[in-house]
Length: 341
Image: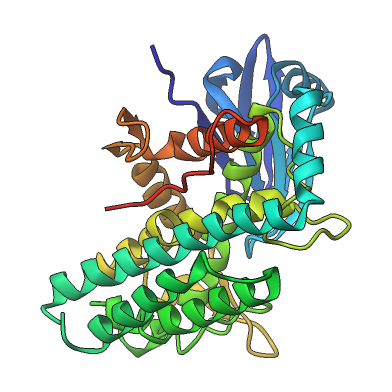
């Protein structure tokens, strides 16, 4: 029997989270608004200004729940977790292969292949839905197809990262063509991150922050070190492996959640505000809408292309982390990235 572990998101300012037995209780203005058994969760995300009691942190540490703190824009501020667990032999294999240039390049290429292939699939789906197989979307899909054929022949990480960058520029150059609603206010006009310069970029950054939390939890759950990656360079404080694994999920999970919210007109320009300097930030209503859309996407069922098993979208990061662990141990000849259809 499989349990679909979930994440509890707290988005309303001045919420107080405490422990009641083996449950997490959320109160606002002294009134209990939610009580959730800790057993049913695998993570707790607090966005904005919330308060967490020490007894609750103790419970989360005991149950292996990661508590992540985010700003209202989706930037991660900090994280609490219990004692580190996991297989030390697996982590040794991970560290050893990350220092082997040939092995590192081979694994990194699989992450890039998954990212580019899934970005291409999202574009092709948009071309079919919009009746534009030969237009801008079709042309972009052709370019991404050519990049895919070159990825596994990259001679080093710099060349591979160049291919990834080229694919990203092509993808976001036509991202506006995937929008059917929202008007000019939601046009991307290229990817802007720090800070986001329009509502769609603000939503993308926010959804990537949520995805990053899920992927890190999945990596840690298997016993991997989330900071020792293969594609992304190691830097103090950077979760390089989590960033690696999340690449293949950006388009099919995070980007599709953003597209759904916009195309179904679940958000409007009134759900955002512009700060001095031109940075655009999401209001609480927009954050809640995107979280609900993201969570619904995680509950969808599909057949895993490599394992051939039925699963939910939300369990995909956990399955991919396990496949990566099997490869690092030598049980699989190569890491099979998740490829959406």
